[in-house]
Length: 142
Image (cartoon, rainbow, N blue to C red):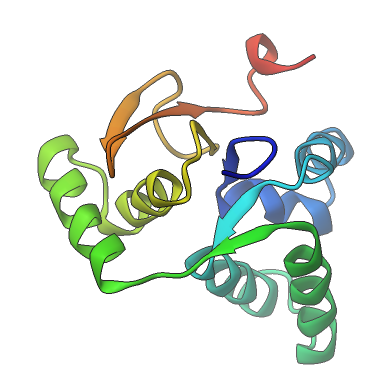
């Protein structure tokens, strides 16, 4: 299990190269605890960086390299995807959000930090109880 037991969604990490300084600082605090991410998170960061912030591929490689060095990375495997389908069917989350939750459970993470999923909600994944928290909610900081 990772030291922090936390898993970060791409929407949290994308603030690291955005214009909202307060959210970038909070994302940096979470990143300092060596969280877990998945290969899917890296792909989503590439997509946002190339399509929404118009970063060059050289800049994207630097961003991905830095994030990869600071995180444990959970692969997206067939068993993670199968668990994600079960989570999506049970909860109504999109398959992409469900893959994040399944990867977190597979990695042994007790919490997923995400701005997009339901704050305070819990799901079961690979026998783990995974809690969703919005890191930008004032009740989750400090």
